[in-house]
Every structure is written in structure tokens, then in C-alpha cells.
Length: 435
Ligand code: GLC
Image (cartoon, rainbow, N blue to C red; front, side, top):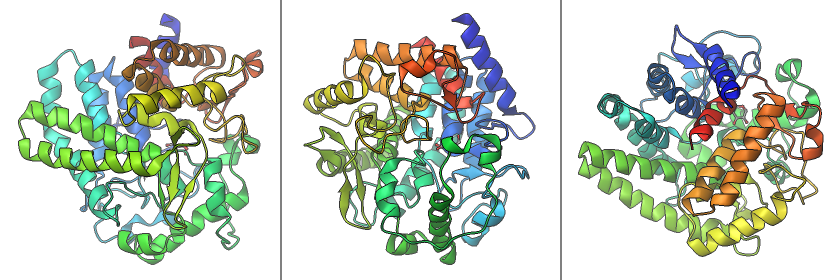
């Protein structure tokens, strides 16, 4: 295990950009800073190099806009290995966007709150890390305030995402139902991802047309949240995204209690209560026995099981009864002896594809969340299985971006897909080994 951990440390150090102070998710395929990657990477660094962990988060939060928004990709450098780049996204269209950094005009799952608490728990020198946290926690709070004030038009305590790239689960089959409602123009562009990675593991050209079209609509209105809520064909309450926000609220409450800021604690508790209540009343699907996405634009639940369906365990959202039903369903559909936990999409669905980007493969970040969520509810054995499966997959294949969920495919060590030497796979392995 020491070898694996050392390898993980090497991967993280290799992806670290010291001059600016951030990590790329992996070389070539993703050559910039990504919001939720950065947060999860900091958890790994916190175990062996707190300076880098702190710098990673400092850089990320420095990119915050005047309205509290934090972008999903920050283009620190010029690179022609990625499409669509800063000239397509044009974050400068938004009146409050950062003047210092070029970025996208969309965001990603808000992990920063719970990352700060993890860093505190991991740190040996608690005073030093608390000082660091104190210096920037208000930015995270401001980010949550942005979400509640701008992404919750019906005042439900649930925030929307307006693009599949905001979900983090970019190519999930869940979005197919939304693509069916759209007919975007055919764009002419040169893909870059497929020069680094086998095209069969990536989205299709037509799927990219949809992605670009939603951005064009947002750009036409200078990324105004109000206009996006009114016009975007993609408007979804995502259980993973909202679970990340709720988990981060919980961590901010714990940290502000330590720092003695009762005003913020009270506001966070108010948000938290409402969010959890709506999450449980709106996103739980009794028949499927787990949480699903809600399509606000077309006013319908998107009734599919995915690894996102189980992420609320990590945020303490379900009752113990609901947690029991979720675990049972997960084991029945995702947990057979021939499968590694946990496929990113329902293996019994005809849309399942165990090789393709979020349409079935196992992802280390979702497994890490699941492991911690199962532990939180007392499912020690299954939590151990998730940990064990994750370690085995990484040992057999290396630190890839995603992995085949079928055990039989792992015989020759070629069941890792997407980018290699992938930062969060390394970072969260380090944390898993300590859990
Ligand atoms: C992919 C993933 C997204 C991640 C990004 C960088 O686009 O879908 O979740 O943040 O890669 O790793």
C-alpha cells in the first residue's frame, strides 16, 4: 500500500503548478484549474503538504466574482489542447466577473465548505489551519449566499444548474431526456479532447452541439442568472450538486461555531433546514428508493438511478429508513459480485455504458463520497467494500480518470479510461487509505 500512496503523491506533485499555485486535473486533457477538482485535490495535499493544500484553495477562491460566484474552469494559462477555451466562454460578458482571471461563466459542485473542514480535521497544527480558514471562509459563505439568492427562483432551498458541465457528471444519460427537448444548430469546431483520449470514451459531436448552444444562450444575456432561469433549456435541481451544498453548509456551521460567528451560523442553519426539507420532499423517488434529478424547465422528475442518487448519504440528508432503502437498491442494482462499486449509472438500464464518461464507469470521487456516506449511516461493511474496490481498481490500472465497472474487464490492467495520472483519483486514494 505504501507504493500506491507514494505513486499518488507523485501524481499530485506532478500536476501541481507552483508559479500560480494550483493543480491541473491531469496533463493535456484538462490543462487548467477546475472548481471541484481543486477542492478534492486539496484534501489529498492536506495529508502530506498543507502549504499546497492551502494555496490550491487560496487560488480557487481568489477567482470569485463580485457576486459570490466561483467559476468551473479558470484559464490561468493559454493552451490550445482544450476546447472550448476562454474566447468561447467569454466570462468578461458578466458585469461582475473577475477582472484578474479568465474563466467559464458556469460553476461546479460547491465542495469548498467541507474541504475546509476536512483540512482542519487532517491538520496536525490546528491553530495554523484555523488561521488560514479564518482568512477566507467568508468567501465560501458568500458563494453559498450567491447560490441561495440567485439559483433558487422558487425559494425552495434547492439550487439549479443550467448546464450539464455544472453537474460534474458531464455526460450522464440523465441529460439525454433534456437533449430530446432541444434542437441546437450544428456547430463547426475542432474537438481537442479526442486527440488525447479514445473517442469511444468521450461524448459525441452532436452532444457537444447541445453543450455549446446552452452557453450561447447564456452569453446572449451576459450570463444573467435571471435570464438563464427564464430561458435556458437546461434547468435542473441535481441531487449531487445540492448534496454538496448541504454538506458544505454543515461544515461551515461547524467552522463558524469554532470561530464564534453566530450570525453566520444562524443564517446557515436557516438555509440548511429548508434545503434538507425540500430535498427530501422533492427529490426522493419512492418507487426507485433513492434520490433523482428534477427538470425545472419541463417540470418533471428525471427518474433514473445514478451514483448521484446515493450522494445524499454523505450530507446526512436521508432518514435512517430511507438510507436503508437506498443501500438495498444500490446493492441490488450496482453491487453484484461481478461488479465494482459503484457504477456511475444504473447497470440495469439500457442507457448504461461501462466504458463511456459518466454513462457507467466507476469514478473515485463518487466512491469516496459513498464510502464516507455509508460510514456515516453505520454501513461499515459496505463502506469497506467501496474502499477495497477503489483501491483494487487503482492498483490494477493506475490513477485513471474513470474505470470499467465490470470486474472481468480488469484482468489485463487496461480498464482505466479517460485521462491518466488524474489528480483527484490520487488525492482521494490518499484520504481513503487514512479512513
Ligand atoms: C470532466 C468531469 C468533471 C471534472 C473535469 C475535470 O469534465 O466530468 O467533473 O471536473 O473533467 O477533471
